Image (cartoon, rainbow, N blue to C red; front, side, top):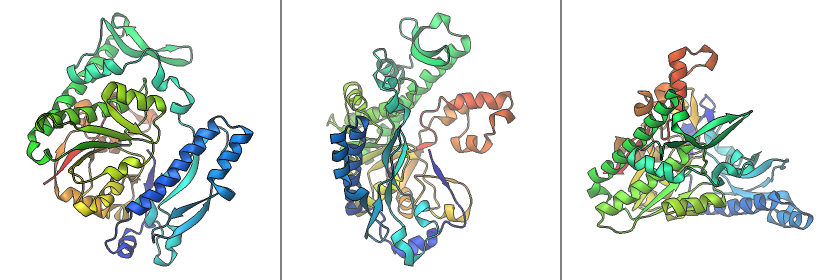
Length: 410
């Protein structure tokens, strides 16, 4: 995840004084961003198989190579579409409060755009179709591990082996695994099963305050990959939340919807076939947020929670949110240096957290016996690590959620 270093250039005080209680993200602003993102998706699809005729089609999306955005004052600004090099794509970059507040001056608000287009290298998921579409795959196995703690099926487990310079994922006989690998796989499965039970219990324990929830919305859980279970496991958690909510609500159907710009068509189909999750890669699901929504967003690459809370201000926020810990000090980035993630705290987000109960759900303490924040504080360059620290580094790759908490409106 990218981040921004908090420095004296971060002028949150000036930004909040300028806003005077107004939200940064409104329905109108997000609708304009949504329309632009739709064009970006079309543009990228055309450029996958570009021809002379399709080149003209792409140019019509952005006449004169320009597009419009909204600035912090709500005014429309015109920008140039960035040049696309081979192996690149366009993405819509949404701005967080730290970036918006850098060198903020009220008489230069036209420079403070809330989103913009940037050219980035295509992710591995797009350049290697096998990431989510291998004929042999672990989806059903991972589902079983999540619910029962099983780490092998018919004396086989899903793991990798080195073939020349490549790492090949597939089914392997457990008898041939090193004892350390077998122990590690068993430990991961037990942790998953414990998380599944913990999440189910949290929903049941808070049944009275969650009885009004009518849907689960997920944002930024990532594209699916046979070599990285983290994303699929987070989607499994969303399915678990919905199933638990249905139980406490007398069997009333609770739909799950998930949004991530990196979903491919195969991801969308898999999420429905395996987990009955409706998925899309545009911003449409943001417009479905209301006071009866259960939100799931874990370490997203963008100010997702800030957008959600701003859009939900008219009804004091969503019913519940499973997300990274929300800081109790929205001014922290202005006060101290540090790596502030894209989804940094805002005043409205901190106010929402104060009106919620908060319960720990993450898996860092189960896997590493410490919080993710503590681990990142202790982490050193690999060459400076001792054997115990290298073991912790290895364990960190098994973390699927991090320091995640369940926030429920009081």
